[in-house]
Image (cartoon, rainbow, N blue to C red; front, side, top):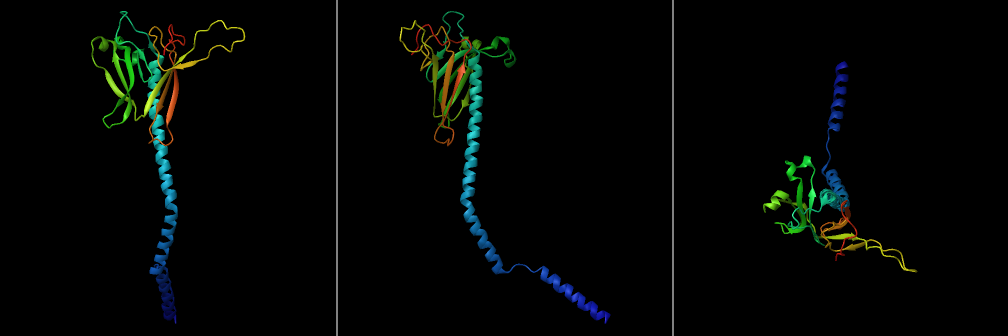
Length: 237
């Protein structure tokens, strides 16, 4: 009796184990694959849209970061700009045009290897790259290199760009207002600054990006030159 009872119990355990390790049938696998395919087809447009948004957001963030670095460098150069003309006819002279900047600036002593190299002549202009795109190029020469007609260093400050433009703040000289006249003249913006005896105090720079940038098309910033003026001796045009 005891042996029969043990044999019966072992048969029950064996049947339970065989039932527990039984896999899915072919029909069940086909049904699961069909349901998964339907779910994947419904979610794929949302997944593609999420990937596109993520790529565009990442690209815009990178452009903003590169623009911030370039504008910070330009701001440092302009904030230390000054008129440099030790001989009365020093060349090249500063230039503040609608699409080009060139001026003399002072770099801190800790940023240059020699104290005599603190004065730099920097240029900002658009240039074509080897890839066929347009980039903002920054060129820099020490005064020693300028005097010796030596080339300095050039590097892309911001790329790619579709264009950039520069304007300069100007306030007309105040005159005695006539009775019944309007308010005094306000700030105006000029496309060029021709007075080489005074630096412009307000410089507005606009950088335009191409159609490849979905969210970031234009960035505009105003820089201040502490030693500049908003009332040049002769009106620029």
